Length: 218
Length: 218
Image (cartoon, rainbow over all chains, first blue to last red; front, side):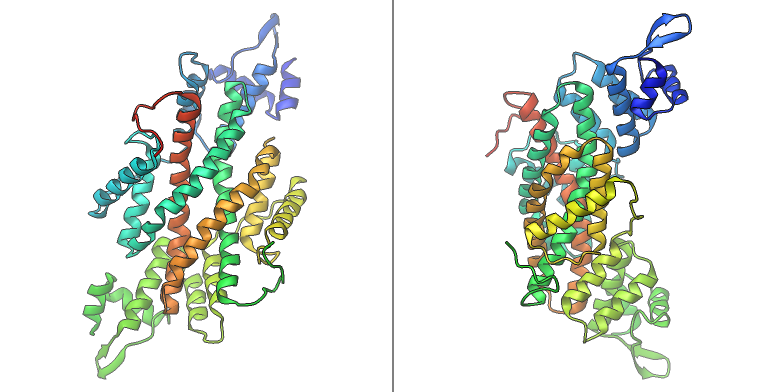
């Protein structure tokens, strides 16, 4: 297809497509005449991935370039590519240096060991978790940390469904795209559901009898 | 106790305590002499709540004043007070007006009916969820919406644990404080756990054999 059709199909304006080619994010089309190039499904897929990393993942172009490099490197095993994408959409949090943070890091290490999760000790999500646990201790809500295993169990079931969704893809671009979409939008989806479930649980606990919607749990 | 001790115990500077009293967020102490007032445990609890709403919930003082009004109104049933706090820490999202949003709102209504959740049709978390579903459809990942019920089940189990944690409190201030802490820090905790569980699930799916940590699931 010509660049105009690629633009229509992907929703990305022609000048932006040309910019991505110049920046090395998108391979150039195959020249069919001195000033005309042909693009294929691979270009369309790559454009979709760039837009997902940009719009959904909120990633800067430099980080997108790194992820694409991992996608294009045939030596990189799939789970390393997925990990590279996931790490780059996770905002790096400042190191927590309070007295509670050593305790929190130990709690995270113990949790990983207890559940047998294969996660490196320096994973950014592990550092985020330690930061949250330290904040709970500081706020005088260390008791909330007792819910860690119940939360972890729920996270396991959600993550394994996420992975099943991702594994339906074959092309590495599509795999990475689903990871980004699933991680970012999935997190927002779970957050909204949890707040809805709070409303319901609180109505049941404190209201007594049927709620204003009058619907019982089926 | 005197204001200096209240400040030490709560970690809130004396001028800030005086400011909260002037703004009506904290009741004045009982005057024991023309220029000395005595404060009690109720003041300390109220200060903790204000700090939690401010620091953890990120709420503006005007919203904090509204929540405190609900806390202080003996006519307000507990679950309405908790709801008032929860709604005010949820950022209001702009109404989604794309063609996908009508479909998404119907998906949310169907989910609430299916699970028998007692949630009003205009709950902000329901609108957030509809926004996420619309974004998934727009990104060409409508298939991810199939995971909705599995996510909802995980959210139910987490929310009911959250509520058990909250219900250990007796004073309304403490109840509201736990809701704020649990909602905000609990969301961050789950997000980090889900990302860790992704790393593990992906290593198991794509790596084969034992991971670099060499630990099997126990």
